[in-house]
Image 1 (cartoon, rainbow over the protein chains, first blue to last red):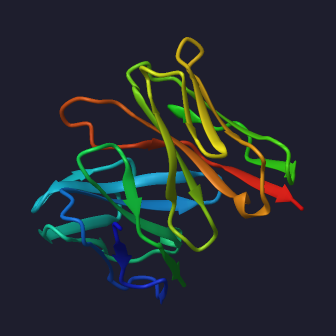
Image 2: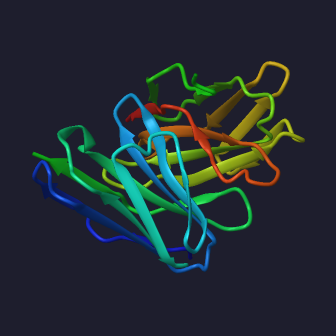
Length: 111
Length: 114
C-alpha cells in the first residue's frame, strides 16, 4: 500500500510566522505535489517536484516555496503566513502512471 | 479559465438509487481522466479512471463513461450507499513529456440519504 504522510493534521499559526508543512512518501515516487483545497474552489496546485532538488510552480505559487532535498520528502514553506492562507493543504505523490496518491491533509489556520 | 468543470456543487440521492456525477472539459488534449473521492478531514482517494481510447470503464458499483465528442464524462454509482456520501472530484491530464499535472474540477458533494 502506498503511504503518504503529512507532519500535522491540524495547525494554528499567527500572521507573519514561518510555517513548514512536511510530506513523506514511502513508495520511491519521483513526482510529488502540494495542493490547497478551499470550499467552492476545488484542488489547486501550488508547486510540484518531478525529481530531487527540482521544482515547478503550479497555478497558485505566490506566498509559498518548496524544498525537495530527498526523494521521499517534499516540504511546503509559507515564508510569512497570512490569513488568506488558511486552508486544507494536501500533499500527493505519483508513480509512473497517472494516478496520484494523497496524504491525509493538514488543516492550517492562520490567525 | 477552468478546463475541468463540475457544474453541480451538490447532489442528493436516495439509498439504492443511481448517482450520476457529471464532468465537462474544454482541453481537447486531455487523454486520461480520473475520479477521486474525498471524505471530510481526509485526503482524496483514487476511485476509477478512463483512458480516452475507451468510452466506458467499470469497477464494481462504479462506472465511468466518456463522450469525447461532447468532452463530457460521468460517474455512475449503482446502487448508491450512505458510505458513498463524499465530495467527488473529476481530474484530467494530458500525456507526453512534462505532463505531470492533474487538472481538477471543483468537486460535487454527494449525499446519499438512507
